[in-house]
Image (tube, helix red, strand yellow):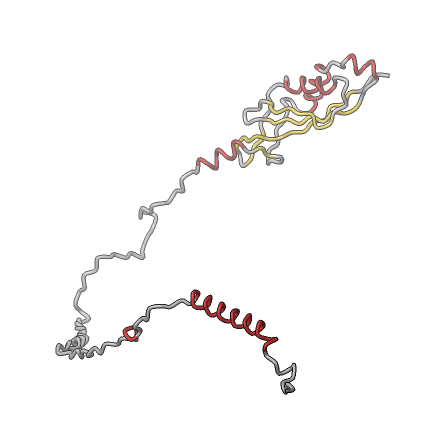
Length: 228
């Protein structure tokens, strides 16, 4: 008898494959069963938003504050005028006199003398005054004093130094000479000699401003000339 099954329809050849597939599926199901986790059920019904209804209290104002009283009306100021007759004498505390002659004593206001102004004038040095200071005996006596007292320095004589020295000094209120300075010198010991002679001058007649002696600055030239 001939077989009607073909070799493709025969399942006996594929039995081993189907067995392996079944074992793999079974093993996967067992592993999934072991890894499966379960959680306890939680009741979430009590977590909803809870609202409470409060009754709003209405406060009724029963006390009423009375308005402030209006200000009192301004008082009327009544001025009484007293009419005095022309022949009635009125007492007056102030006496006014429009008549005065040489027999009436009048107080004369004398301004006090400011001491600060006097001290300032004492310290101030004037350049130009009403009455300038002067050497006792005049300019001729001053020139004679310089010629008699100046000694030509030996250094300047040997070096041939000559010229004009300008000396500045202050004539004090008592006529004494102070603050002697050389404005322009020539050197060679002539400047020092000129200072020495000026400091040893006798007292001058002090300068005056408004009739009072004041300090005055004076400038004097002294010429050094070699003979021949």
